[in-house]
Structure formats: structure tokens, C-alpha cells
Image (cartoon, rainbow, N blue to C red; front, side, top):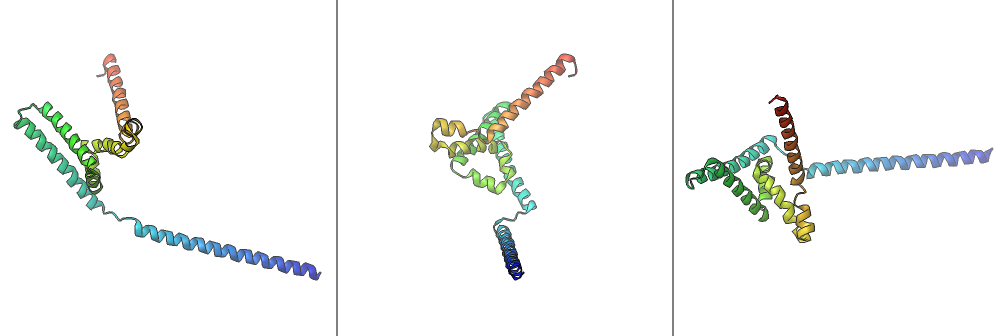
Length: 179
């Protein structure tokens, strides 16, 4: 009977030691979790929504002012009609965006201005040019050719598909007399 009691005591001690180790492990995990959460709070930047909106407004507004200046100059100084001046304005804004992307200036503008720099045509040009510049070291075909549309590709694809679908709906509507 004493052997069973000794075995029981030994078993109870092992169970208690195991529970103590599990408790210490849980405490260590909780401590690590708290330390990680504190680290995340320190590292995560805080954002002010009104400030971000103001920056986006200023950046997008500056791009639009530049576009309007190009449009007015093309119409008045170059005596171009509105459609041709608009085409030149678009081409020059895209060219300027690609040049600034190549000089690593546009990413800084986009980082500061947020959606104000990414929404206009200049943002789309940046999204096409940036991967091409980034992957040029991999070669013409596998670098630039394969990666140029990684960001803008889905936009182009779904834009073309949506245009086709809406055109088909319009055509069918014309055929049956709805439009």
C-alpha cells in the first residue's frame, strides 16, 4: 500500500510540475504577446484623416491645375481645338509622370499625396512605369515585358471587358428598341 501511495505522490508531483510549467509557458506567451503589441503600437504610424484628405486634395488639385494650364496653353498659344489640346494634355501628363517615376520623384509625391496622386491619369502612368523600371534588370522580355502590367493589367483588363459588356448591352438595347 505504501508503494501505491509513493507512486501516487510521485504522479501528483509530476502532474503539479507539468501544470506549473504549462502555467509558466502561458505566462511567457502572454508576456511575449504584450511585448509584440507594444512594439506594433510603436512602429505603426498614426494617420490623421483630415490631414490625409487635405494632402490628397492639394496633390490632386496641383495635378489638375497643371493639366488645365497645359490645356489652356495648347488651345490659346498653339491654336489647337479642344479635343486635340486635350489629347496633348493627356500625353504630356503621362510623359511627365513616367519621367518623374523614372527619377524616383513620383513615388514620393504619391506617398505624400495619397489618392490625390494615384487617381488622375498620372497615377495610372506611374503604375505602368514603376514595374517596368523595377524589373528592367531581368531583361526586355522577362523583366519589362512580363512585369509592366502587374499593377495596371487588371485595371486595363476589367476596363476593356466592362466596356465590351456595356457596348453589347447597348447594341442589344438598340436592336430591340430600348435605346
